[in-house]
Length: 135
Length: 130
Image (tube, rainbow over all chains, first blue to last red):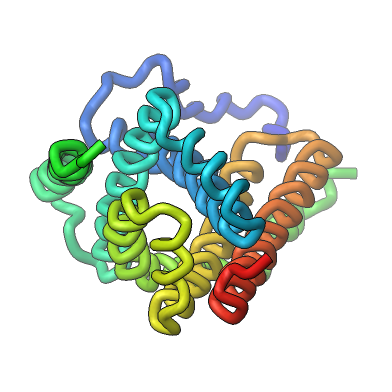
């Protein structure tokens, strides 16, 4: 950190996270990071799936049994929401890179759209999947 | 000492790291690829969940599926390496801890990438025969 010149007025500091009024673009920004980390773990699960498949039938069935358990399905549902939110958030970022979508109303709307999109699509896919289950 | 230095002299070296453009572009290129690959991947995952071992082996025997899955692993792991590197650089100040975490991150991502691609190729080529 560069030190302040002697006698200079202290520079204003940006307020700490705790002092901000929560708003939707801020929530979306934080969620982008959180879901990025979630997807990080999720892709490791996918790599584990590939490893199990390459290790043969027994390993594959054990791994799928783990993923198919109730806790496993909860994790996978979370992964679905995380991936779809991160995807939608990524699309917002790509549009911002083109210099568009910065108006407050637009940014607020796209933040909500990303959240609603990820939840609705995940619920719909899982509902279709679970209802189509022959079990 | 500092008193003799100009403001410009003090600022020099504190700014741009003089690289990072490649990383910025790479993150976006993988992001665009992943828009398509992830959509395809999630859809495939739901079909694979029902097919069992034989269904998965049969699915990956298709060159299109094997190629797209390998691409998903490559784009995904590269994207998550840059993404996690940004998070580490943002929050971890201690140089040693930061370097260690960046190293672990790189190893995990490159390891996951290599492992996934080799596994996909193995099953695609041998039909899973172990």
